[in-house]
Length: 119
Image (cartoon, rainbow, N blue to C red; front, side, top):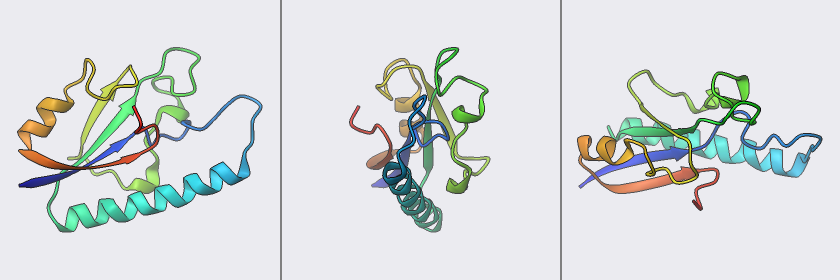
């Protein structure tokens, strides 16, 4: 059974809300990213695929495509050969190629992490 690490919506601007600074939330975001980075390292050591799901926001959205907020957080150490699945809805499978990516890797056991994973 192939395991895969799926990282959803861990993007620079995911928690940016206009006019809102929430130090406790940002502190937890830092801690979550640190733990996710550890999982990325563990997945690489186990030769498990690492798949990033990146939300493409509309113009003006905090995750607008091409803006700094849209970028995947750099401290997750994304490799060039990691799959990046781009989505426009809250559902990572809706109108994306995530199922195909998982099938290509023969992934049967998923470790799902990130922000907004409740969707």
